[in-house]
Image (cartoon, rainbow, N blue to C red; front, side, top):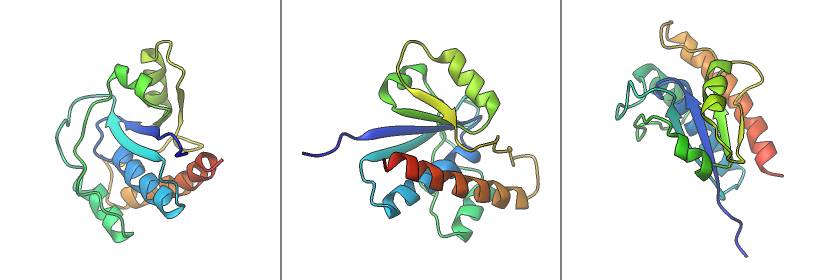
Length: 149
């Protein structure tokens, strides 16, 4: 008997920095752990960047660590997706609040990706993307352990 596929959505504001980094890293770490029954996607609470690739600084930070984010295209989270996801991970408490306001009666877990808010590196320097990647890699390890149970 095969395990049912679990779906995880990673959410930030525009889906060009934090959430695509989270998607790429979590997907890679799940694959490394042999968890093939988890599908990871990402989206934003806004539609500002629909169809755009991830921020070039985010993609460069991922490349420096051996990840490939080149296939990413931004999309906006749709409330109907709650029914199709098993877990929705917000990058900060603002996203968590926005998602919880949109959540209806669906029985889906909506949680923060990391123990503390993942800061938005968009308006900062390039190093901020590496710092965010550090935080996301650490948090992704925790999610892999939780999803392994």
